[in-house]
Length: 189
Image (cartoon, rainbow, N blue to C red; front, side):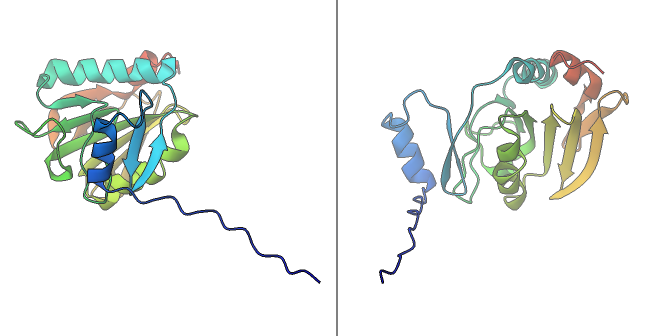
């Protein structure tokens, strides 16, 4: 009688920040949008119109108030756990390098939809929390709410239609009208 041998799936390689940056410089990924999270590579799906509308609104609001020097739109940030996510929007300290480190980032905003939700609210959020990004907002287009994390804890859920205005603790000069974000995404109440 033959015995069956279990088939094992090969382990995905663990990428360091240095290996990932060398691969990008060498053009290994071409035009594909790849993010490194916890040493693993993730390919990002194309951006749908609601996502693009919300991002445009938030980017315009933050840049108008803070200027371009502190606002990063889909720009990599460096996390010590072999992660180089590209948040939809981030606010860094003044005079930070083009790819700031976690300790130079004051706020991260991710806009999530059906194609990105499992990733944005899973491994990507975990990386931000583990590496102590002080404040993270998840604009969930499916839930029609903004989830606010501070100090690694979910501290608020602000639903569309409630007239909420958000201000990040380290970026109090920008007030974000939650309903306006969803209107920009063309998601009416």
